[in-house]
Structures are given as structure tokens and as C-alpha cells.
Length: 176
Length: 141
Image 1: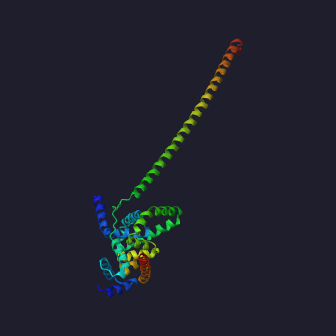
Image 2 (image 1 turned 180 degrees about the horizontal axis):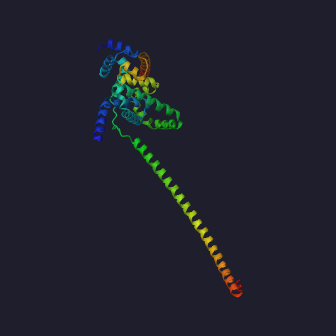
Image 3 (image 1 turned 90 degrees about the horizontal axis):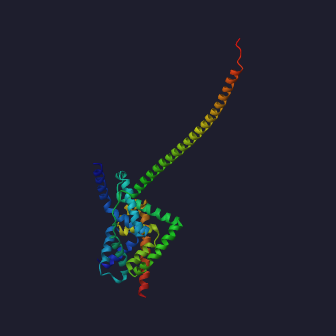
């Protein structure tokens, strides 16, 4: 009896989470870079949501709340990574490991864009992801990041311009 | 869509002034094969945005975390530790009590053997008195 009730609750929860779990994953991957870490982060975040399921009713948009959580979680992860030298060395090592297939990939111009976004500052990265890939409205993003829509526009414009300039540069380089 | 219009949208796009609908128009335009040559660098970018959206989280979502069971395991472990420490303590106490008991028994035995020695001596003394009494019988008054 109790168990079936729990199962019911679980499936209900999964139904509310389904529409945006991929978004959580993609945003986490944009910020944390590695797929594995992004998967761990997604699992952790969904589990956190599940544990706080009673509180979720108080939020207007669970999805926006989940995005805010994702952002905070990833920024925390990045901070703690920077704080511990050991991890940093480890991640550098990982980078070197994948650099070979990355180099191969680089011939593919689509991953050039990926690289360009990766080199942006965290906030710009995040906003590009939320707007250009996840296609959220400005006031939605503003709520998620607790910023003013105008601030988001400014950051986004800066990011878009950087990407285009870099692409243009590489494009010209390729021709000459 | 007209090229002039696209160029105008691109300018708005760079200033972050386009709406979602307008950005979708741009994505549509650049997903077509016929892109004006001077706009080619945009094609890669919008193409990347569209393909990135297709990435999925494929792992199953676990709502019964392993972490929780770890927590329970540690609780169980600490209970066991506590019980065993208590048991060990009891054991030591028991052994101590046994040792004290054995020592007491030993001391009592020592006491009793010495007492017995004394008894023998007293018995000899008694015999001595008896015999002296026999020999030097005291006349009764």
C-alpha cells in the first residue's frame, strides 16, 4: 500500500521532471565541460528536487527553479575545482587526454563554435546556452539568474559579438 | 526570406534585440543550403545551436540514492562498534572481577591454613596441660 503510493509519487515526479531534464544536462555540460560530470550533476540535481518535492508546489515554475539550482550547483563545482589544486591538475590531465580527438574534431567547423563558446566567461557561456540553445525568453532567464533583463541582453550581445568576430577571423584565415 | 531582411535581423541579433521567433527565423534560414556567401560564418554558428539542442540525458534517473544507503550503513556500523566496545568493556570488567575473586580466595586459603597451623599448636598445648594436670593433680580444697 505504502509502496504503491511511493511509486505513484515517483512517476508523478518523473513526469514533471521529464520535459526539462535534458536542458539541465545540457546546461551542466556547457558549464562543467565533461559529459561524465554533467551526468553526475544532473542525477544529483534531480535527486535534490525529488527530496524537496513537497516544497516544489510553492514555485511558479519548477523548470526555472531547476535551472537556478543547476547554475548554482555548477558554479559551486567550478569554484571548488579551482580551490583544490589536485583536482585542477587532474582535469588538466584529462584535457590533454582528449586533446587528440579534439584536434581531429577541430577540422569540423561546428566544434569550432563549441570551442569558441567554451572560451567565453562563465556567465556569457551560460546565457548563450539558455538563450540560443534552450530558447528561453529574457524575463525567464532574468528570473533564473536573478539579474535584470537588460543586464542579460548586454552580456548576450557581448558573447554573440565575440563568437561572430572569432568565426569571421577563422573564416578569413581559412580562405587566405 | 529576403537577404536584406536577414541582414537586418542579424544586426538585431548581435545587439540581443531579436525575439525568440525572429531567432527561429534566422535558424531556419541558415539551416537551408542556400546561404549568401558573405554570411557563411553564421551558418556554422546557427547550425551548432540547433544540433546542440538535440543532446539528451540518457541515463536513468535514480530517486533512491545510494548515498542514503551509505548513510544507513554508517549508522549500522557505528551501532555495531558501540555494542562491541561495550561488550569488550564488560568482558574486561568480568575478567577483573574474576581475578579479584581468585585473589580473595587465595588470601582466605592462606589465612585458613595458617589458622589451622595455630589450631594444631593449640591442640598440642591442650595436651600438655592435660598431662600436667594428671601428674600434678591439684588437691581440691
